[in-house]
Each structure stands twice: as structure tokens, then as C-alpha cells.
Amino acid sequence: MARCSSARTRACPSRWARAALWAAVTPQIGAQVNVLIFIVIIIGGLGSTFGCFVGALLVGLMANYTGYLAPKLALFSNIALMVAVLLWRPQGLYPVKS
Image (cartoon, rainbow, N blue to C red; front, top):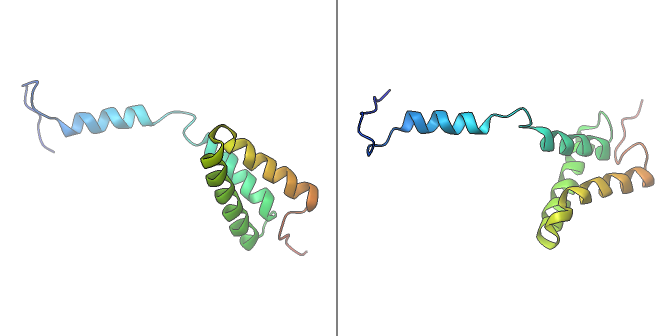
């Protein structure tokens, strides 16, 4: 590792990296992603790989289009999509046949 000099005008990449890591790691680091993963799995159907793929496409497209048209409604639109799919097919889009 390169050593930083004592001059204040010189750059110190290792300090910057430590500061960025310290600021980026929080207890809530994956909360929003976990919500989206839950929505994808519920939409696709529990245990269905292809259903999760289709659910991920639907959630991604819904989030992008809604984020472009009405940014404040982006996360709610995914929840509304999940509710609509569950009202239409309570077992998900592609349920696993048992």
C-alpha cells in the first residue's frame, strides 16, 4: 500500500477508500432490495424459477416506467402490481405443480 505523506495537499487513496466504505455500510443496506425480491418471488410463484424470472421482468419494467412518469410512486407501483397479480392469481403467475 502506498503511504500518504503528511502534506495536506497530497491525495491519500487509502483514506478515501476507508471513508467511502465507512459511509456506505449501514444496517439498512439491503432493505429496499429485500422488498423487491419478496415482491418478485410472490408475483412469480413460490418455488418457480421461471416465474421469478417473469416477475423480475415485470417488477423492473414497472419500476422504470413508473419512475420515469411519476417518481414518487415507483415503490408503491410494485406493491400495487403484486396486489393485482395476487387478486388475479393467488398462487402466482407460474406456480409449482405438486
